[in-house]
Amino acid sequence: MIQIVPAPKKTTFFQRDYAYNGETVRTSIDILLGEEEYILEVTSEDGITIIGGSEKAVFYGECTLEQILLQNKKRIRAMKIEDEPVFRYRGFMIDCARHFFTVDELKAIIDTMARLKFNYFHWHLTDDQGFRMQIDALDKLHKEGSVRLGSHFGGTHSNSKYEGYYTTQQMQEIVQFCAERYIEVVPEIDVPGHATAMIHAYPEMSCRGRKVPVETRQGIFKNILCAGSETTYEYLCKILDEMCRIFPGEYFHLGGDEVPKENWEHCSACKNAMKENGLESYEQLQAWLMNRLAAYLQQKGKKVICWNDALKGENLSKNFIAERWMDRKNLTLYWANSGRKVIMGDFYHTYFDYPYAMTPLKKVYRYSPYLKNMDIRGKESIEGLECCVWTEHISSNAAIEYMLFPRAAAVAQTAWGCGRENYAYFESALKAFKPIFKRNRINCAPQKDWNPLPHKRLGGVVKLLVTTLKGLSYQPKA
Ligand code: ACM
Ligand code: ZN
View 1: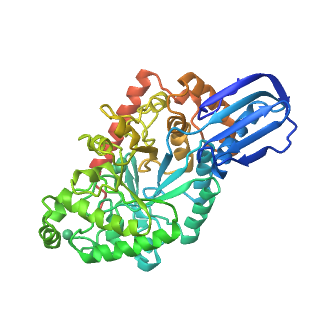
View 2: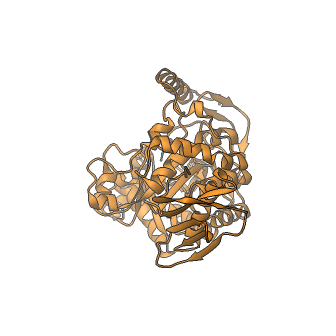
């Protein structure tokens, strides 16, 4: 029995087997197949052939073959695999703002994700605790916005300087590395909230115009970009220009999550913008800001994504693709059912910054991107799925790998082959995937940690709550 993760659409086994001597696999392209569709055949007469709808599809056939060869080195059962994904967008997000991961560390993760047939790397590059992109037009962003004077997250309290940013060349290197694996980089600049590091570098982008330190704690902060000031747009467009030169992909993420509007309520520029543009609420002001930036990006051919929080402004452009993560008002459901695009995820299932005690592997595997009451149009509006790893509590490469793997494989399973196999198949296919983790030196969580017993789950969740609350109430010395 051959087990593949993510599970292929259809596998037919034949009685004979084939003696594989390491000879070349014959690959070809048939444009009648889908862009990500491939047929892999192992026959005793012709050896191994892969036909794909594109070079990318052939690559996916090769990824499948790699797993077959890892399970059967010499004699391979004759078979035919016909495969294609359920969802076209299969993403993973890494937060490199709270903690910084080196190019080599990212490459090991990206290569592993490619073998799981993920095709989008959403790179969260800016947040309150650090701005991590070189931007030559506004160089204080990376020179000053990338440095914070301590880290007070959860149970960790350090007063050491923490810094790091990706140079243009390094970002291009990641783009190229991803492209070689048919992964597109989706860069994110998070606006107008989570912007303390930007405001530290350029206080004129905020309502009060005052310098603030780069955040050293976790949370949601009221220093947000001023929506009424033309300087904000002028600076943001310069940043977007540079990001578009570095990241040639189709998708672009503008953030838009967790935006406390308090400072806008006391800002004459923000109030004027509301009056002049007939905006009735601060949520509409946020949507107006994001619409302006999205229109700018759309002129450059981008498809723009926002977190589901931005849907609260009823005037948000219908062209936005909403990324769902937590949506108590079910605005994502409304968005999808009215035919607008969505990318699905869920805080309780696809957020891997939380321990296995809270989000065990089985729970991730069981995640369904179909919301209750989603109609046919809504289901058709799903571009795909994304898992996220936020890094307030994750400061080392070993830790991020442990949190990501193997849970990301369960998301890959849903994104590529939703409903095709059962959990038992998935777990044993994961064992067969182990050599790929090993080859990339991935610190995959051991099987004993994947699904903790109920008492351990409770203990783990309590511990998480206590350390998070301690972190939130901690006041660093001035
Ligand atoms: C988010 O987790 N704040 C998108
Ligand atoms: Zn303002």
